[in-house]
Length: 322
Ligand code: B12
Image (cartoon, rainbow, N blue to C red; front, side):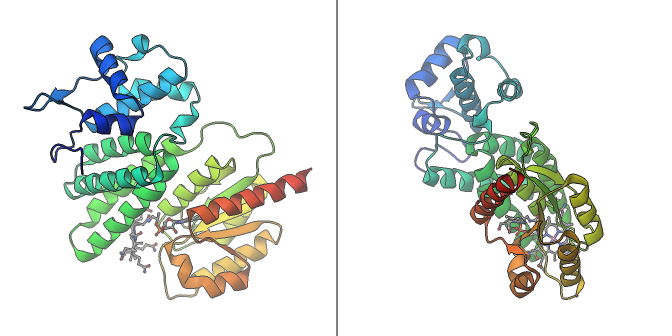
């Protein structure tokens, strides 16, 4: 890591500027005039900043672009800044515009190491702080794709190897579950937005993949009803009827040898009929390709593929309702 000074995550102004999107001169000016951030100094006299400072500068940058005066908001806490941006319905909280893809991947990797260290140390508070900062810095979708998803995979591997106990996984999963409530779209969808039901089939207790898929669909403008995990086909189909949904998204993470999943998927397809799209994603989907093909399921190969399919279905929905 070129610009990092030591292992306790302190950064020089050049890195801070790149990551926050605030020019170095402006960082110094905000610091001098308004104490927007207060860096420490190296023995050589260079300013050094924390992840918290970077997240703060990024939010200040977004708020000033929205027209807020720096003199008014420089002393706001991170939470107050987030609230302010939420109130502005600031789209930057949803998509992070400033980073190049390679920088974003690098940053996500950096956060991934820090988050894993917090899980290993069983430090829930530090894990939450890293998540919050990463969310601001990466934007929702890269946060899901390049941080949460690989982090969960590593947690699963280390749990299997015995480095982590089940309770480490439970602590991390529960924080991620609460966090997704922040990621869900709280705005009312436009009238006529396509509707979707998201769940997992009976026997599948892993719900985070489904929750993350729900967030992605909402970011694409779908009105999503998330049902939680472990539901029989009849209940999922009932939800489709109640909401008049045009798609059902099912996540499968765990492979099993029994016949329950094939039975449930066939029954679900039969109940919802051909006019409602049945979408299946998740790590275990690749083990059931033949079944998915036979049932007439849209087998999702990754997040980009999911977004493409959502666009396609939304266009079909628009045509059919006009
Ligand atoms: C958290 C966790 C749990 C938690 C779940 C908590 C919760 N509320 O969800 C609990 C404790 C309940 C649990 C239980 C079990 N678990 Co578990 N668990 C995990 C862990 C660590 C994370 C799972 C997760 O949420 N992944 C998140 C999603 C994001 O990952 P994904 O499913 O791979 O999905 C990918 C994509 O496809 C996409 N995605 C997912 N869904 C969808 C949907 C759409 C539409 C789209 C576009 C994308 C998408 O996101 C990912 C991108 O690669 C995994 C490790 C891992 N590798 O995932 C083990 C893991 C899945 N569990 C495993 C096992 C064995 C179990 C248990 C059998 C353990 C036991 N002996 O009891 C039980 C089974 C419970 C059941 N019947 O379902 C194994 C599964 C192995 C297998 N046979 O497939 C894993 C892989 C761990 C391991 N390395 O061995 N687990």
